Length: 119
Image 1 (cartoon, rainbow, N blue to C red):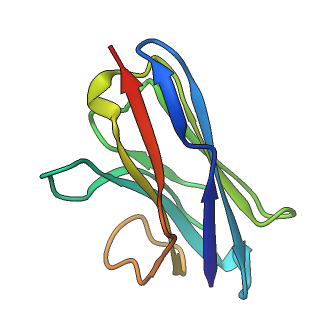
Image 2 (cartoon, rainbow, N blue to C red):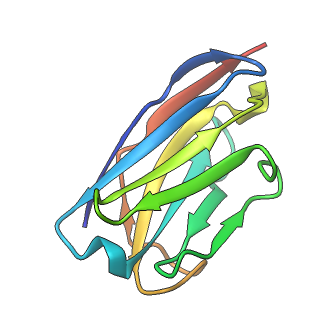
Image 3 (cartoon, rainbow, N blue to C red):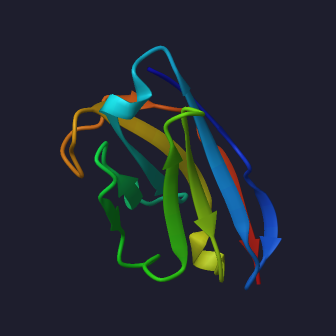
């Protein structure tokens, strides 16, 4: 499956952004989808995942502020980010894996989109 992210940019603290990931090349509805992020000098960390059956899971730092959703008809997965903080600044990556999984190894990754939150 091929993944292409969009929607990143620069936003002030407290603002909102919506990221989108378009998938192609495989049966989208059979894949669990996720968003991870990596800030400079830090390890890649979980932001949110949504399984093929629609179960969601969020990283502790974004719970209550971010919402992941998927549209199986459009082959897209979105990440709505509200109440953004400077520490949310990172490159955000879309990821996918075949099956109904919330964790484990994610073999497919997009190229990433930069999100910068100014204070």
